[in-house]
Image (cartoon, rainbow, N blue to C red):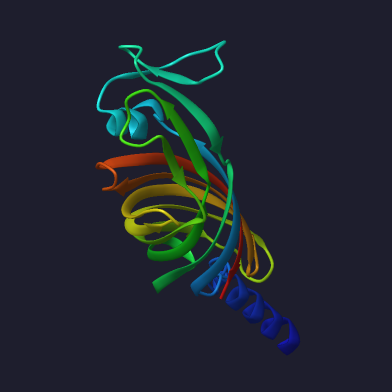
Length: 228
């Protein structure tokens, strides 16, 4: 009888006890990264070459022509322009610093880079400030500030990030030195510290000789990164 009474009391207590609550799921977060080093190959596209720099150099409207031995001609027909070379390949090394760390969400990004500039060789037949326009062995040093939006995975898991930034820099060539400014955006995937990015940049290079002019470029970059 005593055993039956104890069993009944245990059953009543078990039924009256509150059910255990499930523990909330808390996924493991990626650690914060503070610096990213990169090397990239660039495919450089000219933008508005008839206006920047040809119209600025010649001081008159310039039109592109086809089925001719030259590529551009002034609207008055007095000067023709032959583009002897406009390189399309360049490279760059860079470093991006995340002062507040990059893990999940938006964070401040400060990026510096050293880039090569494609060689440009142009000849003029007719009135022009000089018979040729040449920029060779060019390089640019840029500094930009922007926002990086990250969703990094812990360990070697697959993550992603995207960024947008803008900044200023200096352009140096064998012939001319000048100022430049740019905007850049892109993104990529990461696995642990290793990443691959695709980036698009719009850069304006400004020079003052022989007259004030600019060259606009759109480098499209494939960038390998190591982030710590």
